[in-house]
Image (tube, rainbow, N blue to C red):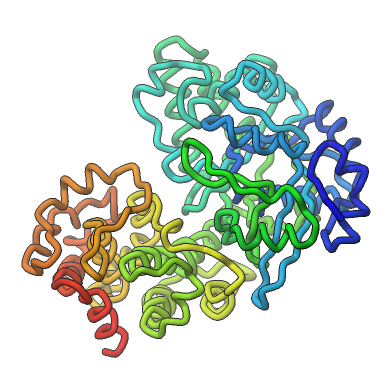
Length: 523
């Protein structure tokens, strides 16, 4: 049987189901018509994480009786939207189970998709923002998407700037069309994401109001608290890039549209996403214009304190710090799969050290969640999942934007408790990142580092640290004072001596990373 994701696939869903695919249990065409008439949810950022989390939540709500879907918008690369439209905005989400089996589902919750860089796309999404029925906008634009340059601000309203100026421009159109309330929801993977989104958007709005590009009332409207809200969130679902092995497995089920292409701006595109069985979306319930029935989509709702604790538990203790430690160390040791790394006893001890030994004693405990149980699930089930083709190279991307978030909070809490000088695994992970930045693996061979917006700056600042010269580790001391990178001044925190000692060990030459890791794991 040949299964094709196209405009006619909605008439052949029984064939997909017979082949083992989950299918939507709602009238997709009716949903699209209702969404066009009464748009309620826009998402900015059309990546695989959206496909495996947000779109799945939306499909569950639709299966349970909700009637409108998601309008998807992307700013940068038109190929992302072209990829979505090539399959009539349908795609397959493949859950990869620990036993190697797949659970594929046809996801149809995207009602429309638009490239904001085009005239037509910008016009349509502007029209949607002007609609009083729009209740929320969610974002997945990564940490660096929240960095707003002076140049972007100076351009003024329009679609030429980054994600935040574009969002502010669309909000300006909404304000001018009647100023209906709206919730602006960051679902990017860092702590206090709602506050960070509010800061970024308000900075742009205030600058435009100050120079006459927007009314002063616009900036006030965004800060009103009852007109525009910025709920915080905790999101969690490990979502690697589309895997050729998953594509082959889907093809074996009869799916024809499994080709993976590389877009010009970097990154694979496919008609499917692949992810793990576990997922979390915890939302601060603050929606001034109403909201979809998120409960029926498996979303946990609570107040800001609950969401903040859940997020810090995950981002600062139970998952993200483990990922970063594994990523930089794994790249140095030549690993290409996270699950493979978890079979390495030394790396497993590092993961336990970062999470259980040094993280849990100062963890935030959210109401209704058990951090120790969450961490056990991560270490025993999620990271070792052999069906999940996640790579340390993917996770190592943009580490300069993540390391302060992932380790800084835990270090600050240890400083407050008077125990910072006892930390060793977190300082090792920081030292391993600096060693990684030298772009020389543990065999002494050059390797290509993952993308990071600060690579050139980091190279300059760490020019005095040299592979094969352990004494040069002290050249990193000034760098370790940079709280904008590490979330805390590591020298003032008393952690820098341990980082430098580990870095010195890692610089000895070929085999030094493995030797240092082994020594620490067995100390």
